Every structure is written in C-alpha cells, then in structure tokens.
Amino acid sequence: MSAYETMPFHLETERLILRPWAESDAADFCTLLAERGKGTPTVEHIRTAIAELLTATESTGIALLPIQRRDEGDFIGYCGLIIGRSSLEEPEIAYELLLRAHGRGYATEAAGAVLGAAAATGRKRLWATVGAWNTPSFRVLDKLGFERDHVSTEDSGEVVWLTRSLP
Image 1 (cartoon, rainbow, N blue to C red):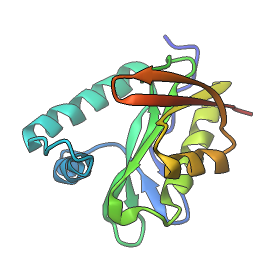
Image 2: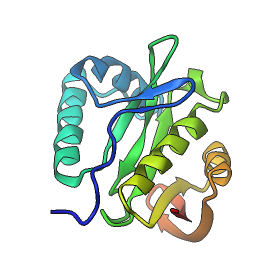
Image 3: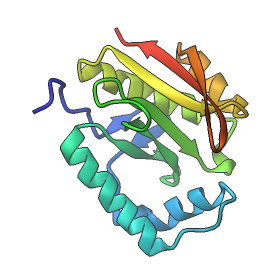
Image 4: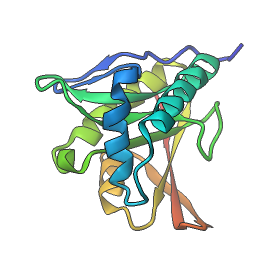
C-alpha cells in the first residue's frame, strides 16, 4: 500500500471540471493526439489507452484526468499526475489541451487544481518535464511556481526538468 493518500479524481475550478475518463472521451482524445502532428490513432487504440489509464490509477492512486469546460460541457484536454520520467513518490504534472483551447488560462487553472490534489496526497514535491521549444508550457509552470532543475537530451530533443515543492 502506498504511503500517500489517493488523489481526488473529481476536481472543479471556476471554469473547469476534471473527472475520471469515460469511454465516450475516446473520439475527443483521438482529436487531441492527432493535433501533435504524428498521425491519428484509431479510436480502438484510444479506448485501450483509456482502459490502461484507469487501471494505472487504481494501482497508483494518481490520475491523468480529462478536462471539460463547465459551461460548454466539452472536452478540451487533460491534466493530472503521472509517473512519466519520475516516480510515484514525486510524480510529474502533465497537461495537454486542444489547440482551440490554448491561450485562455485553462492549463494554468487545471494544473492549479491538480497541485492542490497532489498536496492533499501528502506528497512533498512534483516534477514537470517540457520540451525546450514549448514556451506556453513554461509560462504555465512559471505561474504555478515551478523552477528549472536540469536539462536532459532525448531522441525528441532537449527536455527541461522543473520541480516544485508542495506545502
């Protein structure tokens, strides 16, 4: 059993709702991943990915959650905690939004709620890893109090590691 509390899987902010994945998110998740410009995954592949995310959540007590706008009710991306390049004790915060939702403060708002959820688990520190080219993500992390720690080089290019202590 983990030394940490389970993260809350339903978070609400002024404009957003973060909630567990549903099979009905598959088509929207497909659209989001296609925007990365590396081809469009099949809906079947996405359904499998969603099932894997839900299984991982059960075993780790942390989650990547879909984001929907409160008023419109539409899926605009995801935000949450993952093990990623880090560890269960000090997970990574991760977020990705549909292009149409960029530039409106949604990532900062969602990530702020996830920071609170992470602190509620009893964790002391979070990581974030961002491609060196991704200026908008750096702005979000800066607003949330993350600080640069180091840079690594991967096949995809330079990755900047940032960290933030939790209260």
